[in-house]
Length: 225
Ligand code: ADP
Ligand code: ADP
Image (tube, rainbow, N blue to C red; front, side, top):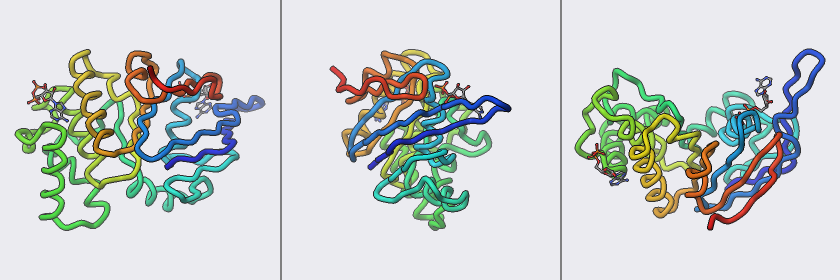
């Protein structure tokens, strides 16, 4: 699913250059549930941006679902993001004026899918995350955990091969965070590939495999116990 080879990302700041990623190689197979953990400044956001095709590396390769994507132009990267990746962010990133089902429809609108089919698939995705009875609620009528589950439904509605979650429980209380993790486990059991980025050990420990990053390098890669 993911094959990153010898990736570097260098930020040039005046006379200084920072290796945000320093020779990172990483393989993630289909159906894995992986967490990437590291302290602040270790390179997690940079790696997330690379994995999510939000930015391109300075050097190295990235094969996503069989396709080399590290040298693509912006419009080609946008295309890859639309079809290959479902994003879940710490801040949910839902549109406040739209209902749950309308938010979940968005990726399908970008793909040019008709209204009736969009509503059918979005309703199904919301049912899958346990929100079948909340589809016409707007974000401010939902709890934080429910909003994040709407975001999860939006990430999975277009059936992307990869789901990328960036601190998905970071804004949530313990119980809502646990609900969101339960939903991610459910998706994993259904066959999704999930990469979760976090600085929280107890969250990372819930994945199958834990990758530790520090100073832009992978320092540990092990099965969860
Ligand atoms: P994390 O997400 O783990 O906190 P980041 O990926 O944000 O880490 O940052 C890794 C390193 O790269 C840090 O030293 C950070 O200061 C640097 N960095 C990140 N983004 C930029 C940028 N746009 N310009 C310059 N330096 C950056
Ligand atoms: P609440 O506000 O009590 O969480 P909901 O009706 O939104 O009310 O959710 C009911 C329960 O559904 C939650 O307690 C949560 O644990 C559970 N839940 C979370 N994820 C899923 C899921 N993927 N499928 C089914 N139920 C889920």
